[in-house]
Length: 364
Image (cartoon, rainbow, N blue to C red; front, side, top):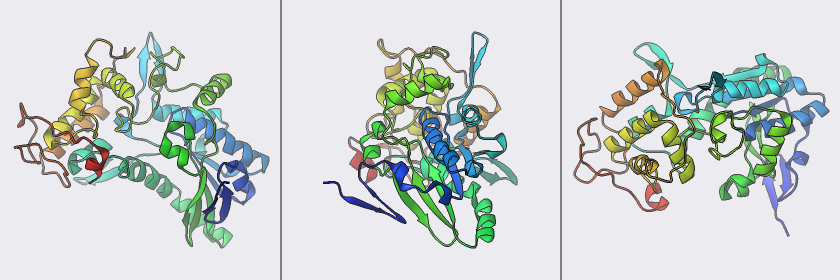
């Protein structure tokens, strides 16, 4: 017998359809998260169906939290341009029927020498001296969720003044049970914020949709999918990366990582530089140096395309990371045997990376 889950203002039963847990016309703002990946559009389409049926489609917004050069970029092959993640998120929004003025893109930035500049996740990792891992994922909190909430703050204040009550928001995510054991256990509907300004319900309407069903739906709709999912741009065969997040995600599968290393060698080298200088492995199970070496062995996946990673945005990332590595790490948890944590780039030739053996070690 399934137990009852108490989720803020609503109660749902385990295994029930999350669509029934929401009263569509009682939601003031729908926030449809689009990463440029395959799952966001499927969840967004389900949420849009509910909003349209209730006659509140004008309350729907789409948003993309950009990770800048760490996302999959656009590529041109055979004279055909295949869009990167940020551009694809905007295209998905338009394809779903959301007006362009209601699509928002956010990217983290900071003040540096009197100028507002992008603040990329890899720069933060280089400064901190540690990588994201399970339970500690700033790539989700500070680089996505926090920015998305902030993007709607002024709208929430204005609506609250009009309504005279907290503003009800539905934060629609493309999370699905098929993706991982953790996501299978995660509620498809829960209240994450409840204060005097806003009530936010996190809603994953595609939670029970299978991976194959998502692919079939995407193809049936004629919706463009991120080229990284294919064996090569334009193949349309879904035989490339299984997930589309950061190009090099610490939580990605080994095959996805090897494929990404082959497709973006300059980015992989930059990750390896951070790893080498800070003396901390890319994740508890493997180092970036090992991934680069394995990607060159026979039997490694064929990249289908190799990205040059040239241009001002990538050069700015490289400069920021190298500058960060010239300073002591703010919070390093591991130190290479025989080397200080704040070793400068180029000062650790021949050093080895300490590689913890378990996730528990990484989280200690």
